[in-house]
Each structure stands twice: as structure tokens, then as C-alpha cells.
Length: 300
Image (cartoon, rainbow, N blue to C red; front, side, top):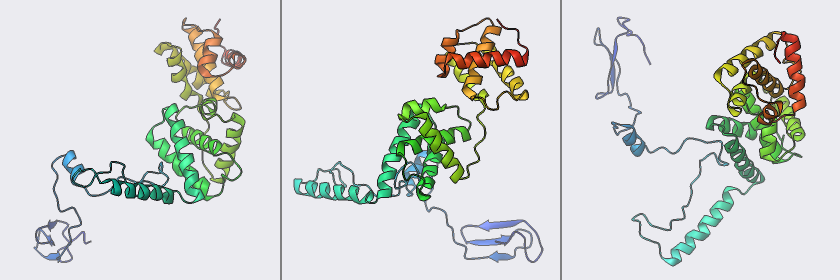
């Protein structure tokens, strides 16, 4: 479409939607005529009217096996006026509903997606993940299916690995131990599937930042904001000293929270911190000693 008048080179162009014309506001030259209005023929004055009058369907959702683009036969057994259908018609609709459901998941891929996406939604609900991560994880799982990465592996392990990858990618702190506990799959199996997926799909997943776990541990231990701020400061100093490389992020974050609690006179026992972080006391003890030694911390 023209953005300047071809005659006077003016940019003051005006749309006349009633006549379907585009003309120059300076010299009056009609540039385009017979324009088609591609907008809706109805008007809406609030959000409720816009939702009621719109005739488009729901947006595409990768969390559904058919992406939400399917016709469903409801189970109310009522006609358009709300009257109940006769028994003969009800039996007919029952058969139609049954075969329609079977046809929608006829292939092996559809059956796989039906099981996997249901499991993905279950794990994500337990972890309290937002819809954006669920949709992104569902799309990644579909890519795994297209590339044949699920052959020879448990569906649950692939789903858990995809969710773990998306949590790390989006900066949402969820540990591998948490996902393993909820999914019922061993950490070793999830880790193996995660490495395979990230390599085959060329996923650029950043290193897990231990700082993401600090607020969770502080809240679980009911510590003050001063402890959290101190723990963040310890994590920054540890990052500058390159203490985070080669060490588990949860263990380092838990040790920073424990050290900060000691420094702020709100001490919790190593067992309490270990239970909140889902790790062993030995791990916290080792990381705590490293922080004291490398950062010259005087905390007893």
C-alpha cells in the first residue's frame, strides 16, 4: 500500500472506510478505491461483547493431542432448544461419540501424545509451573516425537526431561530430584534423556544459576529478608571466585543460605536446610567449608 502521495509526495494520507478509498489529504488525489474492509462486520463496546460476538475458535494449544482443532460431541444429549433427546437418538449419539473418540486417537502417534501430554500436565501441576512453560514443553515433546527420540525410552522419562530442560531455560528453579520424585522416574534416567534431547535438538540451555534457589530455601526455612540478601551476596562472591563450576547448584545455594543464617544469627541446623533443599547434610557441610575457606568467612 502507498505510504506517500504519488503526485505531491505528501504523507498525509486519509482512509475513507465508507467509500473504500485512500486519498491524499493535501491535494485530494484518490490513490486507491474499492478497498475491502477485512475487519468484522459487528461492533463491540467491551470485552464481554467482543468475546460473545467473535466467531473464531479457541487458540491452538500444544497441550492437547489435536492442538484443540477438533469437533467434540458433548454428553448432554439435548437438542438446540435444550429439550432432551429421545432414547433412540441418545443411543445413536452414544455410538457416534464413541467412534469419534476412537478415530481422533487412531494412530500410534496420537495415542503417544495423549498419554505423554496428560503426564506432562500432571507433573507441571504438582510443580506449579505456568501455562507458558507447559506449552513450550509440549511443543518440545512434539519435536522429540518427530525426530524419533522417544523410541526405546519411557514416555515418563522424556516428559520429565523436557520439563526439566524448560525450567532451566526459563529460569524457573525446579531441581532434578523434585521432578524425579513426582514423575516416579530415576534421576539417572531423566538425566540421560535430558542430555540426549538437548544434544539432538541443539537446545541452548544456560547453566543452572544457584541464586534461583535461594528464595525458595529461605521461604521454606522461614528466614528473614536479611538472610536472603546476605545469601545473594555470598553467591555473587562465589561466582566471581568460580566456585559454582562443577558443583550442584542446589548444594551451593543451600550452603549459602545456611552460612547466611549463621552470619545473621538466625541459624538453622544443617539437617533442616538439607531437608528443605532435598540434599544430604554431607553436601551442605562440604559446600559450607568451601565457602568459608575461599571467601574468608568468619562464621561459627
